[in-house]
Length: 96
Length: 321
Image (cartoon, rainbow over all chains, first blue to last red; front, side, top):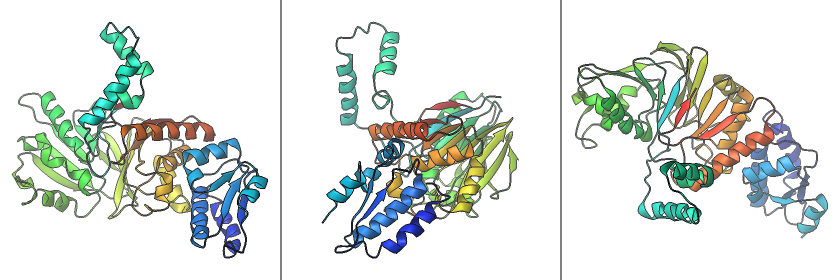
């Protein structure tokens, strides 16, 4: 995920955002097949997270590969998004 | 040919100074680490410091604002920006001056914000008759910016009263100029009131000075243009003032960039050495060291081509190119 395809992530997420609020959906991103994320991808996650938080919704990421996890650590994105080891754990921990 | 880049000032926005309590913290850390060691000679002490103490205990990233000298073996001095680091640069040049011989200085100014010009009133060679000072920039009000900061009530000596021959030279973004043995190409950058980066090329070597520049890598054309500007550079001095999270949230559009974007752009461009520059004045040395180490680790885990060397600028640093 880099500057060349970050817009596609944004486009994919956008339709789901209005319903990501109390009584609606939670969004858990399964990152198990993501091998790299650049600042452009992180920016989309930041924008998405801010919108969801503004409507009291919940977004989390799960199952990061080690490199992606380290990029999250270095960029301090572990403080921006809730991070879980597995999708199951994310769903359980973010359940209302 | 080898060039030498000397950092006279690398702090962003405002000069910073250490203080007694911070100095004592360092001394305590050093002395604690030295307990039970036998350090009989100066050489043993230096070896111990270099091998066993943290960089931020033995070094300070420094407090002067931007001023970077590029030494290429020519007779003229070449430097970027005239932040507070220019004072020490000027003192060193005066000390090295040959009696009866004048010197020529070429300064390339990124922009006219305070921290990038505040050193000029204290640049001692400007007060020496016979010296020639050429100040290059792309802002149409380049001269006015310098004249105004020395007008009353801001400073007691007006620019016109300085004895050296001072001239302002207009450059154009994207148009290379041959100056002091370099081919110099300015580039427009995203910053409040605009800023300009400079690419210096000589004998197959290239140095890019790119500070006070915000990057939005999702903008394809912007990214492509900067990758070309940094392309295969031997050294890129890069504005890494803020964290990535700050630049894409609370400090978006503040005109600065992050270490992470610096690594990405240099990797895309195939640059050889990234030097983190324009340090946030609120960061202590320990934070700047962490930022540097994190940047090195990021480069390591995301490397796909040649290794990118990463350093973090400190006042007094010298880089061979």
